[in-house]
Length: 369
View 1: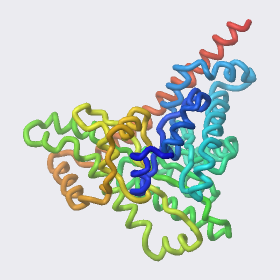
View 2: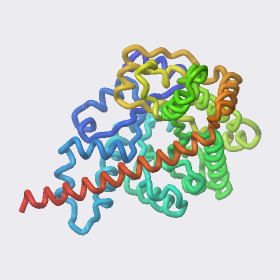
View 3: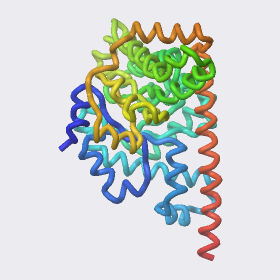
């Protein structure tokens, strides 16, 4: 039986996914209990896996048994595909019961291919084949080259989670890639009814950066703090409602195509002055997903509210972004910076993960000698 607060979210049109993965929760029953509570999917990224590998010995046996000729990167792919495959199996009943709307587990291509469409496609195809589950989603960064890769992957019938979206223009670009990919697939005579995608639009990081700039301005500008991220995300949702309407989309929908749902990512509250579930409660509505880290998930379970909010205040959101621009804080400049920082952060985590894995292999080999 789902927890009442999680069930209320679902009734409002929003699915909860867990922004976390660790082999321990896959084995000790924790994930099963979360699924019973109402969690309907899972996302992962290099930072999450770095933390899991660094804090647990649950991976030592697999690391120690890996063939010596494999690189550290190849060993990591063995580890992550095993965990994601196990999680996919746990969520498979939800995938089937929801008709393929939910029950997905995401696995991310390595950050180094973010600006190379061909390399992204090759790696995504490899991960898709390695996991070999209908409810896996391959995460692809929403760069210009990433969008080109998305179109090809959707045409292949591969489920895609487009990540690191901050700008409305980037969101528009990946919606276009998704729709065009479905059209390519339909033109080739292939079914489109089982292909799924989400567009992961990042939220709290926008406030973190803009609040810092507003604080530097001081005075009346500080009254705008804590408002930009929600406004930006609500305008992304407005774009979603506009793009998945009209004759072009209706032709695909008649073939069974499903919308590319907005997924709200980076929804933990970074500023302790703000309500700890602010980036959940203000973005609730039909055809949305919120992927929450464990602390945010627990906070919403404890005291979250579920009114429909995501399609409120669109005019006010536009006015707010215009006001920020007049204060010398254009949203495009902020989102460009955040994308670059996000890619750099994931690359740093990935490099640290691979370095730590190489060191662990060496230590385990020395211990067994």
